[in-house]
Length: 377
Image (cartoon, rainbow, N blue to C red):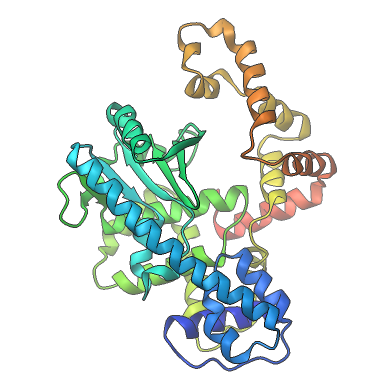
């Protein structure tokens, strides 16, 4: 894992503008791929310009770096426009996730962000949707939690109805969200979670992602930088009470310890099995193995994939509230939507089916072992 150690050192040097000692034994191609997979390739810029031997890798890093700056600039401009429109129309809006996490970095652009996440009241959802359409955004995908909008070439907005699904940890706690919020900057109708709850939501979001696919170095860096920036402002009694009430304190402590080992310690040392697992990155087989374990076998898992329970189907197909006998038709509709959806490539679908078919009991048990050690219930 020499490339992983070098990458973490390079990130630290870039963050704090320090000279990085080059490791001549690393495979530059592996280093770049690892950074790209973990959404931190822009951090390689200084290292690449001074130490990278491969002109191809150097060019790729430079392109990632400049693209990230352009993307971040455009996201910031578009976000300001969106917030002003929502403010003018008196729509109560909550900012979450990457939009706020960027503020904990030394420079805003350092934190790669896929989309802009905002939540509005259900009563304002249609109005907010119309406003985004008027701004040139197009509906891309409709999910239970949010409606995804896109404005080419790379501005994506997730307009949330809720932050957490009913079956996930923290749903009840974050369901009544507004008492946990404070005003955002000088806006009257725009909010953010208070310091403690923003951190709790970050940990919950991380845990949910970890369960189904894994997490990235970027996510571990978020945890470290958040704790460093707000260590003198966080109410730790309040924070720990919330974490314990949600039964995620052990998970938070493990992730926080890893974050400080990676980004604070002078020597990283050997990686343990949890760190090694995280460094392998987001993998579709993690999601498959977790779901197979949770659903007690392949047949049960496939059945749930194709024919979700009425409770789940009602959330997407509200017509079932009045006409429950239409459930079989809605199952067929859902399957057809998934087949013809461009959101998930057919290659990914076939790979998922292959993974389900070939899943080994030992792989499922190994995943469950990692989750128990990390504190995932």
